[in-house]
Amino acid sequence: MKDFCPAFQNQPVCCDSTQIKNLADKIKIAANLLKECASCWANFKMILCQQMCSPDQSTFMEIPEQFHTPAGSLAARSFRTSLTKEYAVKFFDSCKEVTSFGLSAIGMICADMDCTYHRLLKELGDNTSRAPYHTDYYVGNSRTDMITPLKADVLTHCWESTLEGEEACTCDDCSESCRNEEMVTAPPPNEPFQILGLDGIAAIMGALYVLLAFLIGLHCLVRWVYNRYVRHGDNDSIDSGSSIGDIKRGLVKKLGHKMVSKGQTIDTIIANGFHIWSSICCRHPANV
Image 1 (tube, rainbow, N blue to C red):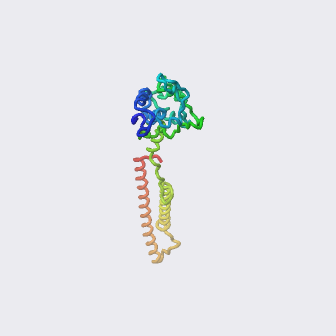
Image 2 (tube, helix red, strand yellow; image 1 turned 60 degrees about the vertical axis):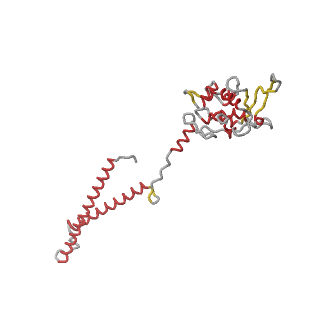
Image 3 (cartoon, helix red, strand yellow; image 1 turned 90 degrees about the vertical axis):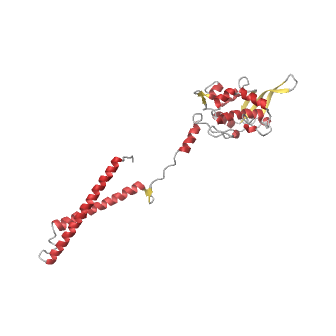
């Protein structure tokens, strides 16, 4: 019971260990095809265990045909099990992508690669192949007030771990597992680079543009002062015949030389800066 029908262990059941062993022997081929996907295999066993061992069999199973045994007792010749459509679809979907030797495992069980949940349930209920007794599966809402179709909450999707804690199916047998793995392993998106609430790159480029414009303006001012007062002089504003004019001319000339010297220094700094910047960009190219 623990190995084959763990959901029914430690509770009153309608089956014994001999029946469980016979059922396990009957579906060995299915086990070899499906057990690599734990969720699929658990669902496959669940539907059989519910029919054989559930103490609530009478709420979802009917006996359409009976017969008398040689001992004179009444026995069931076949059963009818009612399932909700959600149960049937969830059961089928958990196994439909499982492969064995490169082929669909469900397709091999159905003997049809275009197997559907109707065909799978029909094959599952055929006692000439895998089932210990013949079962007709009714999928849909309850036909009578006495019958409540099995609900899908006891089954697990192929991308979920089983109720017993076995790991979910791998990407090879369940495409949804691949999507879930991508969601888990995908790194979180990077926070946008910002400066004072502005786009970081745009802010840096704007600051560099303003600084460059300031330096170019300063350079032009220095050149204008040099050309105006040092190279050509300003005869209209300074009286060359007075000692005061000579003093002013000397002061202006010194000031001009200093400003020219600073302007040349700024030129050199700008040139060296662009040279270093271009060298770094060449050594470390990157997409922008």
